Length: 219
Image (cartoon, rainbow, N blue to C red; front, side, top):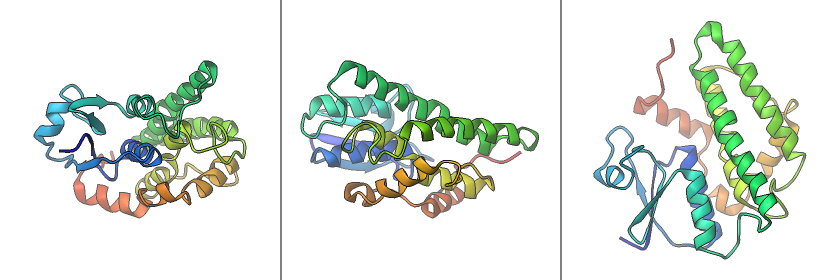
């Protein structure tokens, strides 16, 4: 095994951001694809608490949770920094990153999983969070500054994943007219070379979840 390994699942949104950060910094790594239906001994060894991907292994030491991993990558490899140096600006990036994961991702998944009588309210709640994010983007090319950074990589996992949620669940969460900044930003983001080479399309996600049995059963 090399010095750096990434244990991930190609079609899990939290894993994509780790590879993007490593590619941006020019860090060579070994990618280990995890079968989420039959978790490997290496995953259980390196993440025995949560038993989830992604896991970054550096010199034999595991780092878990995607936002924690991104910070570790930025502090370990100084080239092409993805976090701002200013403490206040850094705290802002951390806040919005957690907002994306805890409100936008969780909200969209809740809308998909909601029972029929709860679905309208769940969709409304998810859209409220996406609306807040849209205002934060404000037609910026890069969310956190003048170049590709930490927050871009966090938000970047959303658009294709949201499309997957919509198609799989038969719901509508994102309207380009309602969320113009998020839509325009996403269109630009997916054309960045290191992103374009490692971002699954919505149809890939749908096929994977339908055939893997990982999608929750609708009630």
